[in-house]
Length: 407
Image (cartoon, rainbow, N blue to C red):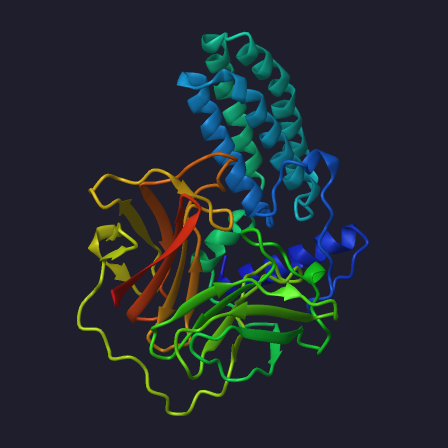
């Protein structure tokens, strides 16, 4: 499907979903988040689009297969319960599926759900071989579910940032702030509006990785990066956050938000104080920085096929070791992921906010020593990457420089 058709499809999907639930269908940010049903209770805040639910169906399917082979069978009912929630989420929001495809979808989901009690009983009685014999049928039914959708409908929120073209922001930031002073806490308050000038409230925004808004700040010399989370003040459309800059002078703010009206992430931009034009940026790098040590942790990036290509999806793998060189496999979640990566192109305008591949961590689960990210650079040249990770309750920030080449 052409890119314009893909965007039209996603906009239509958001509007139709809202309409079927008695919500406004405006594409200017006036819709409200569709409430979750009791059957969708295990769909966390990261489940925003149909593609998110489908991604988690596949993750739970793979986890179920692994548990059946050699894992703790007591956990199997948790996986089937999560599968059920994700399938119901998809079923409730599949407004673009009708006719014979709808019948096939509903029948496949019903047959899959009918298998769950049998799978649970076999797991709890430790009949591993019989349990394994049930999984091929379940997997075929899940595959049939996915076949009823257009490919574009199953793009997840995280994949949209590199599979679909960049979005022109629909949100506007009305911000007036005093110039940040080095070492002093700065309070930033702003109003968020849609294209018609109406205030954008938290109900108008999807939750992405545990937050409604992510404020990403950087100075023009690429020396001081901050990731904060604005909170509503009580005045409709007004938000506030605080940060302590390391340097005097201007900072640029990128706001990472996903309006309910569009279902697409976007990055409206503002400046905490006016940046002089032309402004002095940092010197152009002369070589890549793919390894760095931060707070005693050795952090290294590996690029798929040794390079990142402009306009093409690529995999980046982060590896973390401690001072003795031992791989760190005790990474703790940061905003619902074992690491977060934000990239800024050399134009000081283009930005990427990339989350790791795979699902969100389970309670008590640790990550590492390797974390995979998939991204699609939308500018050639140099890309500064800032990676947040947490060990033993303390967050760390690793900085890298990667060259994006033209194929």
